[in-house]
Amino acid sequence: MAETTRVPGPWAGLYGGNARAVIERGFKVIRNQNWAVMVSGFFEPVFYLLAMGVGLGGLVGSVTGPGGEPTSYAAFIAPALLATSAMNGAIYDSTWNVFFKLRFARLYQAMLQTSLGPMDVALGEIFMALFRGFLYAIGFMVVMVGMGLVGSLWAVLMVPVALLIAVGFASIGMAVTSYLKSFQQMDVLQVALLPMFLFSATLFPIDVFPTAIQWFVQAMPLWHGVELMRHLAVGHLEAATAGHALYFVIMSVVGVWFTASRLRALFLR
Image 1 (cartoon, rainbow, N blue to C red):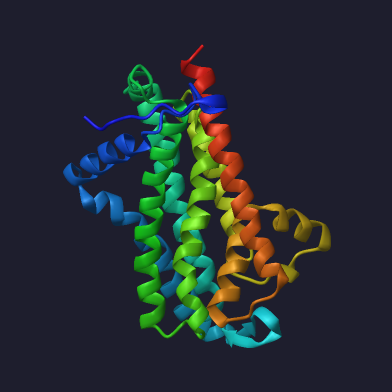
Image 2 (image 1 turned 180 degrees about the vertical axis):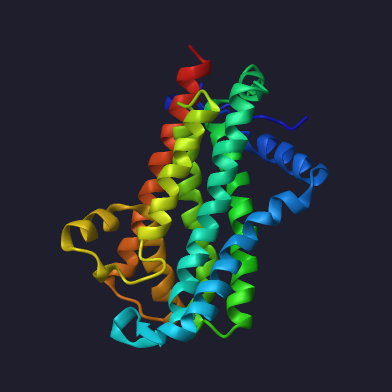
């Protein structure tokens, strides 16, 4: 059994210092499950890239990329699909997986009867969602490089950025899932994710929208991930690049704290 260290002060009761135990359990589950199911989410953005970037891209021609430079349509949507791939991997693990453990397996209730605290559970589950997002990002990055869709050495940072995007979505996804109690309510998540994917400048530039809609799109997290990926793909770095990264740092910190607070409110009354 892993050794635990109680954390004194304001973290007492919230963090037991043993998120590693949750992560170890997660990897044991992965080892024994069907890997084909886990990696299946990787293929969706690849199919989008082949159908839209290569197929439709032959009709579209070049579009305006970061910095106003012309780029092929495939190179324009590929970084956006990488951000989407990281989001999908993280969201799947932090919503449906968490929902089952929370409402049916009652796993978190059992965990919190041990020396683990809500923050340990939150960090462990978010890490496992991050791992899925990492696998998707690595696989899709290999596809991008193989197709010649990256034009800068800065593109190597797209993988750690994909992890940052995954952390942000996983932390918020787990917190939101803690409020949901039925499969019908879980379906609402997809209703929110699909429009965000379609309207976050993933498949076409944001300036095709009226100004008011552009403001709404720019408030959505996936748009920031898409723009950050595009800047890195071509090496176009500016102040806005740091702003997009900061958005996800703040989103991650708020999400982790929110999730831990929800678990404490649910199970440590």
